[in-house]
Length: 602
Figure 1 (tube, one colour):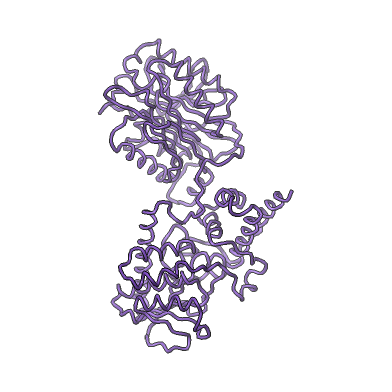
Figure 2 (spheres, helix red, strand yellow):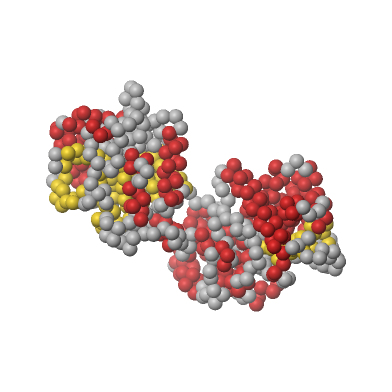
């Protein structure tokens, strides 16, 4: 979808309609299927008392009809702001059009009369109840604020509208629109520019999209609505469930475009029991207009991160790393108190060096919080591997933090010892980590962290520590390459699924399965966007097949995971809300992957 802010001219509806037409052609050429224009764009927002003149209102309505007719060949749902005189009163409205038809007219609910806005001088608050009116020679056009517009071919695409001030009010219409089923909320606005207002608007729009589990598309009037004392520069924002997908700054291009994942918005609502959507628009008291639209596949106008668990901004990454370490340490502290443990042993058998290193750092922090000496923290390795390179790296780290490493034959002095299993979520998802010891005394400290995030946390510690020995010990551990591998005992758990992908790809699949619930075809398309230049389609599909096969076949290994701190929005145990029986079948997922492989071969 796209948001467009033309540089409209005051009291020249024909010219402004031409600008909208040009914008629509551009957006449609880029694949946009839903387009939003600003508030009263056909007359400009600053027409003021000229809105009392019938000649202007009649021209705006006539140009609305002309714009709808000129776009009859465009399979695009668009909304254009237009002042309409209905039964002798003027309303600030958006006309929703598609393929030459005006599907509905939605009026503004909240009319501002403060600051630089004096709309109450001209406009009336629109009715909620929907009635039929005649607009631009089209009869039986629904008019009222309680309207939704849904695509027959893609019912997840359900669009609702509010106008400018509506979202600034204490009870925005968008709340009821979302609870009636709208997954996309469009807002054509005419908000003036002021210092930091663009930042506030961005937070307002992204926050509303998160609160309503929707896409919120916002655009404000272009620079043509500026006066000598009040400047207006446009601002375009397309946000989805809290994330800004595309934006254009004030006094910028006046155009933003992005792909919106309405299917995932439905998935997010399915998973939130407190988000109560009505059984139908009618049940919520809304008029629903259905329209037909083809939704062909096109190149994505959407960022697809190859590391979905890693924040894109460095400052956000640092904050997340710091908070994750703190949560892990305090989670382990609670475990120590609950078990009455006076010692901590990190189990370093058959695990990645980075995982073991992070577990040791967390154990040290937890010991400090518990008032235990650091000598009470140990790391255990199998006795038959005293010269292993991994042991050498971890030995240096243990020495730097004041702990010790011993083999399995070493006597244990602690009367009650907490056993820390360093396995990460990626290993657990693939079933390549086991729990060979007493689960009642084990703590799965990294079980909620994917492998790709672990080195970032170690790098954060190295960057922020004042301890030169610790910094020096962490350097080679961070640089150590530890690819995922299938253990020897695996042939009993997941026979035939041995082609494991690189860590970044496995974590991408985990995100698609656990957090987004993508089907294989969708996960594959996004993976090609994220890794297309690095791995070919056949390679990605074969790795995906292994992922699904292993995930389902090894669920029994995760059925009774030991305690571990909840860190992110995805987990693999029942306490995190992941409920999957050990006997679930992978047939549906594997069959779709096989069908995709067959298409590549065809």
